[in-house]
Image (tube, rainbow, N blue to C red; front, side):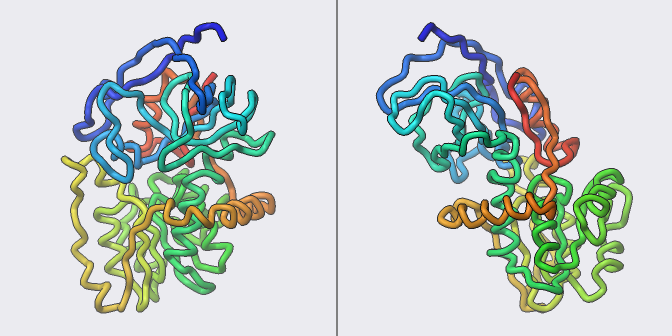
Length: 337
């Protein structure tokens, strides 16, 4: 194969506060030759997720991305060359790849590498059927243990994970209230996603709104934001409530990513409630079950797959920043030209 030029974004600095475009550096390099056991991918689309902020700063469930190395994202790529018998040219593959045109990989690592069925839409694979959809599924059903008649509240409700969590809870017979920023997002939650109510934290008193919409308390809270909103929900717990800690995006840009702890945690004792964090990877053996259900619900129109699509590798830094300013509406993706 003729030498290929690879455009890529490298991590140039550990973020201090809000991610900045200057935390990344544009680079162009030749693609190395394949070794036995490797495949070469032409990347088709990237997922953008709040957890990437952690990867840039510190060791989490994966080691921190070294400075000077290519930035990472969940991605779908197309095989252009293979030295593995189980992958052929034209196969679509999902995994943790670089912000670059071409990725050379052996498929090892925490996320592994999955071949997608022929004809799979890369954008659907990275959104509803990807990590965010799976996180919503297991957070709502396995950790939250929702049941018919529960009052279910979710923050970051117009985001990729929050919106799907709320729609799953609705399918299971819950009364669903979403917390989101802006009238347009809140209108989408009630008019399109089927939520019973939405609270606009930018223009409403969230504590008062929770009191109004949840007069008997909150049975399940799916938390994507942490901080003040987590505290306001803890003040409204029902007996036996389950608080699902999925993320804390309001706290990720604090110094050292050390957020403010909750003040109302004593209510967990008073209401004999449970607060539990989780990572989707602990449910890896159950992914086929989740994907089958998500496909069924999507095909039946019970789940909407709202995506926010940027285009062009050159826009990757601007695209990740959208997550932390609240600019994205639905799952933030970037498609390569």
